[in-house]
Length: 143
Image 1 (tube, one colour):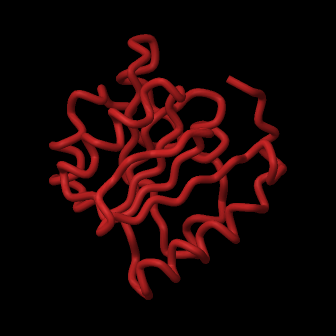
Image 2 (tube, helix red, strand yellow):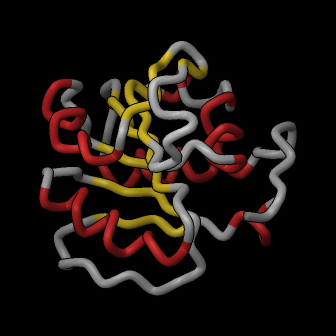
Image 3 (tube, one colour):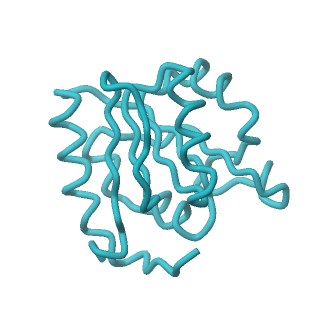
């Protein structure tokens, strides 16, 4: 996974504004972060979500060495609990920061659970039904 410099994430303001526009929102939104590696941790620590009404309320990662750890005040869950996390936390939006080879299957699963919008970082074309909103962020080009 490429290195991410935590202090250089100004594109999130633009991304969050795009998500607001797509969803026509003025509410607070609960966000599930999938993938808590280097990119996921940079996203986790980005302070710009809260003022923009996006709150990461749950996180999951398939790495068994970090499942159960607490990062930024949240316990990292096993991704096999995604449906429960979505239901219990009333999650509408997910940020997907998983390896490229897992992105499509993770997004397919999220759509089954009723996620309304997804922000992902994989440099691939995803296949989703037209009623779902997917925002692709190529962070290499935006840092």
